[in-house]
Length: 617
Image (cartoon, rainbow, N blue to C red; front, side, top):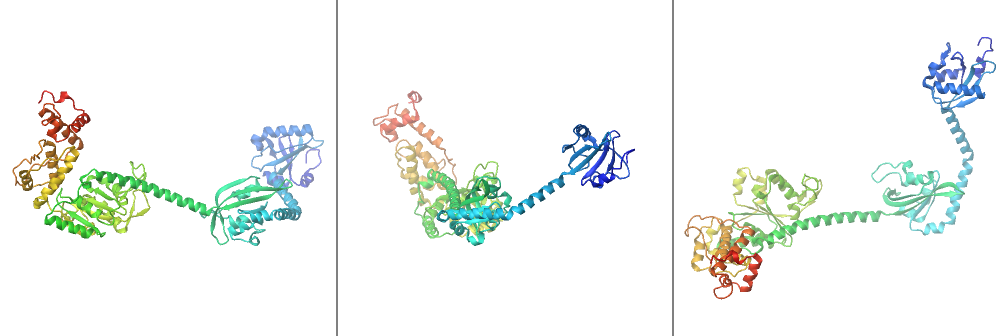
């Protein structure tokens, strides 16, 4: 009780919300009820200073009390009391007592709960009638449009504002496998739209169909799944459109189309395009190999000779060519191992597919795997695009491994694994690609010796060494030299644009008696050099040692630039010898054995001027 005033305890207790008596002049709360004590944490045995409890809210509270005093009553929701829930604060001055205010606090959480209860009660009272009205609307809509709905090829169904199915046309029933009795009045999302294709749950609040009638939005979805009654998914595209009953949102209509077959065709098309891209890369690689083959001697001549060794070799080639047996070709360098491999492939059932030639010792060890097995983009710093390896390029054909013992041991193991499994995995990839490859290996060394030295895996040797073929050195079959030399001379002269000179009996005898440590490769180089130097109609051979010597100087391989320079020098030599005269019996053209028009054409092609030969004749 305040001095000289009536008690207020009974009044505070009668207030249904939290209530406090404030003495503004003393800056104290002088009375409160139980709800205020619980809400604000006030102790019933002592007064409390107002300013200290309000903290940063004090300025607004002072303004609020001034408004109460001025207007006689006021309320606010803008004052946040420390350590208390958000409240609506109402105040009025106590009549007859200066500076005394009654402050009532309404917990906004309670106000919201009361509002929800009231709204629920209103909906409950109107629920049956509204539901019947909505049901009647959809029934009438379906009745009026039944013929159109059932004639449509697309699936059509409607849902009300609660997501319950109101009608389903015939096409929708056929596509989904559900009957109208299965669906009407039930939650459509829970029946046909409950999961994504990857198995993740599809929550109704995320569904565009539900958003159509909840937020009055039209949604066009190009790729989702509906689930059939038998549990199978179908790929669909659909449009979800809100519908209205007398300007009130009633639900949504969904029109959908089964695109499963279209998506499957798109997938097949993508796979086909990927295969086309792979085939394009493979054909580009194969074309590169074929172009390389065309530019080498392997594209210009076959195995030549009539010696018993050659006849035996050709018999073996004929026997093994029609099989898929793995072949190992042995022989000294230059004995024609690549020619034998080419002949085996050409005569086999794989002859229409490429022969892929891989020189095992010509690739850096750290690049062997990429060359053999291929790689995908990003597998290494230089892998800018997917690239097939030699094994893939040889699919359906033959892989020729020259100097197989030069492969690194780890690569030998991976190669054996790929050949045994009939599958290869590119570097950086996880997908294995099936391959059908025949292997021909070649070596100039003894496979047994290479195994003992640890350079060749024993299991790889056993896999490869199914059918061995040995190439005989040229010195052991001199009777084959005439036919080989004649053939090589024709090839060389064709490249030099001149008629072949005559190989005299003495010259042929020298060739047959020479030891040929470089075998056919050395013979080819000697013939080519002699063709360049011979200008008087006869082949002049310079072996460098007497016939029959055990070894002679190697004639190194010449580049195309070397050959072109030699041709140019030969033209100049003819001009000097003929004193610049081109035509006539003793002209440069006659010395070279070509028509004058051809000689002039070559002078222009090589840009030869008179100053280059004049004064030297």
